[in-house]
Amino acid sequence: MSKNKRKGFTLVEILVVLVLISCGLLPIYSLIRNGQQRISRADTRTLATLFGASALELCRAVGFDRAMKITKDDDFLELQYVAEKNGYEIIPSIVPLNVEPLPAGAKPMYILQVQFVVKSKHKKAENTSTDMPELKFVTLITDPRYNFY
Image (tube, rainbow, N blue to C red; front, side, top):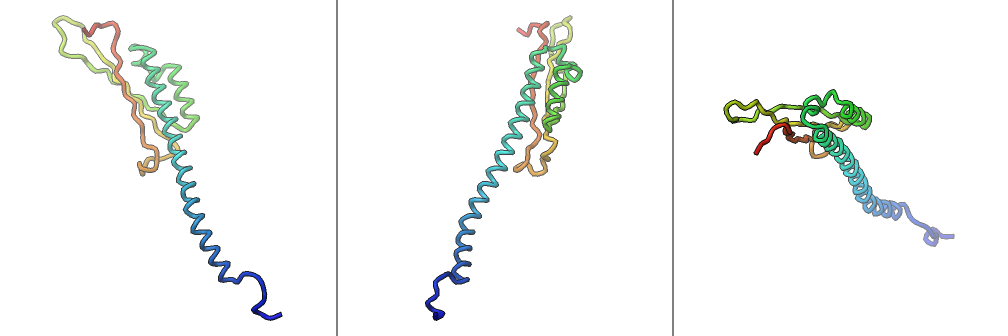
């Protein structure tokens, strides 16, 4: 049998096919990998948003007096525990703001500025375009014992 009549592929043909296949598969792999990273970031941000919104709603629900001491509230401590188990940290900041001006002889009035910062403990925010930054949630709570009208 002569050398020219053999059937099969040459090494050059196989290499050309491998290059063409890899040029088609690498972009697809890159798209899948980037999609998975974006889904993971969206999931992280969604959970952080849920924890922050839950903390704000808890402050609104418990009222002015209990919101001032939210760091000692059992419901808030349970929410912080659940967040810790899921890899998040909830940092509260409660600031009473004095309402002024007041009429002569009126008692001092306060509005609470409640802020929660939610951080992911596993994903550091060194590059905020790719990682989850700190999320801040702020609300104001009024004392119902006073009439603001």
